Length: 362
Length: 269
Image (tube, rainbow over all chains, first blue to last red; front, side, top):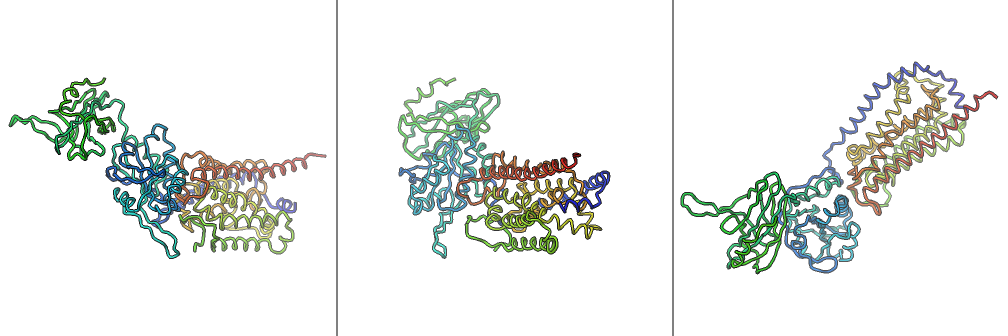
């Protein structure tokens, strides 16, 4: 009450005076506000290294899906290349006692994966390999991964096998040591290597990748493996080679779309190196000549049939022996339309007539 | 040792850490308060004024020091929101309410003159104070500023200080009637309170509705049990909105009843 009385004794400015004051105030206030904004935003740049990475970007790499076998948390062998083939696979190495990098990296990736549609989510695999198998028992590893997503694959194994797996993606093997107090210290490569549906890794994501970046990049990675609905590959067959000779593979590609495309790569996971060839008529000698090609053009509405005596895919140095009737996966990458996956049947030369005579499905 | 709480990127520990800069800051605040209220003003202050003063200083200290300070600086977005509320919307009005009598008496004995008077009058003009407070709230909550500043003790100090200064400017017009707005009508004060929550509400809504974490500091911080980065951010938005509105509503209620009381007195008996 006393203070109110004191207030009333003070000379109060008139309404007009207050209005003038307010009007006069606006200019300096805007300037002051802008200065504050500039001060706060301009000074935020610094080269001082700090723990939380701010803006990270995917690192471009080129790596085939590696072949290594480790053990899952339910004790069964897991052949990485075979079991993850044709899926968008996120491979990371870490350990469950990791206080920061592993759980944060996993959590941010998981948050973005959870935003995918069920169909897209089904096209992904997350594989976490422990680099600390002594402390990360199967149950510990399972419990750790279940906190993110029960579908995540946890792998463990002997230290030498885990080291080999890391080396297969060009990572240095993790170093396990102890600090001066005797506490375990684990040093390991943290990036997540992402294998797309063409069974190659084109990018890896270092620690510090934000959820927004994951959410922006994952659909792009999925799109790499999504063929346009207008493209199809069918009637794929491989003719059993004789002895150690290269194997020839044929298929029929169709483009029902309104724009031209072209086949730019063919992959047969686990089968060897696949190269595209065509037969050219040498006008000088009059003979047919086989040459490697980088693309099979496919005009709008066109069908292209690879067949003996013409264009074909050569599997050089086949990685294994084929048997008649066997079927395996073939990935055909188009320049614009993504990747089409189909099945290849293994036939003999005797089956050729039947195979080449079969009509193209429409 | 850090002199002020900032993001460290290390795993959170409940082990106590000393922040000498915070102690100095709070000690400076106590010194200023003591210099203003010692002697006659203190004797004339009511229990409510004294309690508000002590509560304001305590709120400031709790908001800035361990554990809330470091939690807010580098681990939990919602701790950051609580820190904002405790600094700008709790400590600032409590301090001003506690110092009200002392400030009014000092102003009456030694009226301000010259540049400080002009600057003081300008900054505490309601419209100016509201604009400044909203700008401070908006700027100090942008991801660029939070991520860029909270990593460094000085940056975190700037943000914390800006909140306190912004809060003092904002509440000054409501609580302290000098130097230039002794006739700030009570209904306008209600409107002013709403205006003051403009950006505060906007920031809270953005935090609640964002699809992904906005602040890299908290997203990349070592994980805290039971809460992920996005849930933490949504909680921060809720705390900011509900806590802020609660405090503003409390102040508005006091003003409303004061207004009603004044009206009753003016009615001829």
